[in-house]
Length: 95
Image (cartoon, rainbow, N blue to C red; front, top):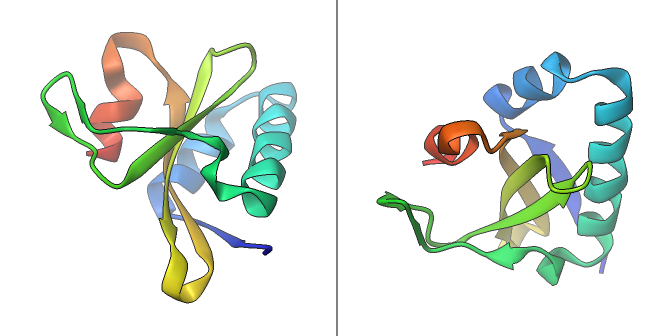
């Protein structure tokens, strides 16, 4: 099953802030997610942030995280946040 990838406005803005090389690596991972959404690790309660129902996928040797949810009824992957782990910032944005 092929999922449609939809980026929230914030995730789209975060993607635009990355370098071209980092963006290409993120797009490569998004392509993997579109074909096999369950590849990402399941997130739950992360550092006091409730990310239940979310998954994460790494890009650029684990420097960048892609946090997303799977909307099965619509066959959509909604990307919530994209960014570096620095001080859990990407998870705070996702929450």
